Amino acid sequence: MNQTNKIFDYPGDFERLLREIAKNTGLNLVGYRDSYLKRRIGVRIKANRLNSYDEYIDFLKKNPSEYAKLLDRLTVNVTEFFRNPSTFEAFKRKVLPAFKSKRDIRIWSAGCASGEEPYSIAITISEFFGKELERHFVKIYATDIDSTCLARAVKGEYEAKKIVNIDDETLNRYFTRVGKKFVVKPEIKNMVFFEKQDILKRRWVNFFDVVFCRNVAIYFSRDSLEILYKNLYDSLRSGGFLITGKVESITGNIKKYFEVVDNREHIYRAVK
Ligand SMILES: C[S@@+](CC[C@H](N)C(=O)[O-])C[C@H]1O[C@@H](n2cnc3c(N)ncnc32)[C@H](O)[C@@H]1O
Image (cartoon, rainbow, N blue to C red; front, side, top):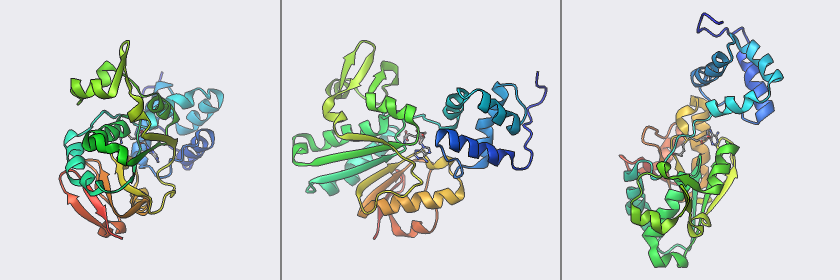
């Protein structure tokens, strides 16, 4: 039985472990803060009564099923419907009016976890446009690096206790009750397209009208934050909006190319 909480970190072992994880899971952890990774990986090392990164590499080789538990620890998927409701209010008041006469509206929920965020965006849009919605072609791209989470998002089924910040009328309008679960109705589901994607890899250029990237950047290292916000800026059309989490703010040189729309709700506009 292990007597100490210390995890022995012989030179190069931690980096070797990260390479093993990348090779076996596809999750590239280079961009994450070391302190964050060490804390989370440490939990799994201790749970298996091991003492060093080296021992853990051996353990993973002999017990590949451990990878699933490790990934569960590494990616924090905490989310909820209408997380920070005031942000969705501001989205409705300060962002959506800009698209009243735009036919195609493209939105990206970057780091969408189990789908609550993109479905909340779809519901807000549906509420905002009402009958006028049929005059628009709305596409919400929802991406995450965690496949297990994405599979849940695609299903769009949520236990009653997971449904928060939604009044009964809205719930009945946009969800169908099936046993103990609520299922997102097809008209909302059909607006959302899920895909596995690493935010740190540049993919879209001048494409989106609005990007939500909330509560994802908190885990990234300084260098990755620069890459992240540059990618998000590039992905936006000129004048497109970026919405970050309440505890996040734009980092790096790119900051000067965003103007603030709402300081409290962390809504910015890309100047191009
Ligand atoms: C805490 S959740 C936030 C979910 C939602 N945006 C919200 O604010 O409620 C963070 C999500 O970011 C995802 N994530 C972390 N690193 C990522 C990356 N490099 N690319 C894409 N998604 C990533 C995680 O898998 C997780 O589902």
